[in-house]
Amino acid sequence: MSSAGRVAPPPPRARLHGAGQHVPGRLQDGRPGGLRRGVKIALDDFGTGFASMTELKNLPIEILKLDMTFVRGIVRDNFDKAIVESIIHLSKALNLEVVAEGIESSTIVDKLRELGCHRGQGYLISMPMAASELETLLEAGSVLESLLRSGDVDTFDASDA
Image 1 (cartoon, rainbow, N blue to C red):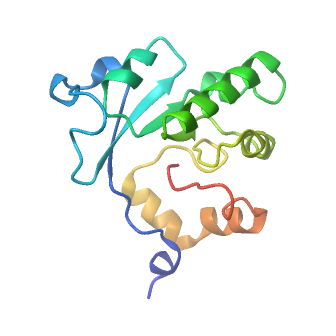
Image 2: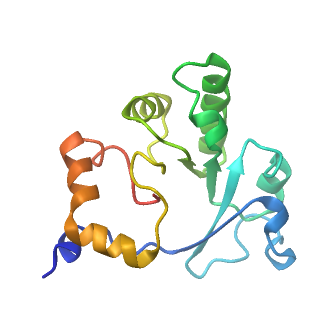
């Protein structure tokens, strides 16, 4: 068995990511999910002008992706921290998964955990790459092994990276 077979998580259900204005009209048939069949819809860049509360109400959203604009500042800026914390609470109240974008340091990971967000993506985990590159990286073990050594994987889900 290859190392990727030992460490790779099970394949996720399909996910559609996009800001509200990019979601096709046929998906805008209200909550909850007119599009079940193994597809989750993620509202990308939440907190910016591209994704609004209207999309939360009118689209069958299951995942809210918190924009990096606010995530990057949560350690040093109380305003960003308050916005992130509020969006995390809103997501939980609406029974949505929340994924923080733009994670670039373990300090940000720690603050997100403290605020109740346990999913994220960003350069701390990896730069964007093609699927073929990801397979090679997982086979080499470098990303997952370093996350396991840091202790971040057991409480912080890096699968959306």
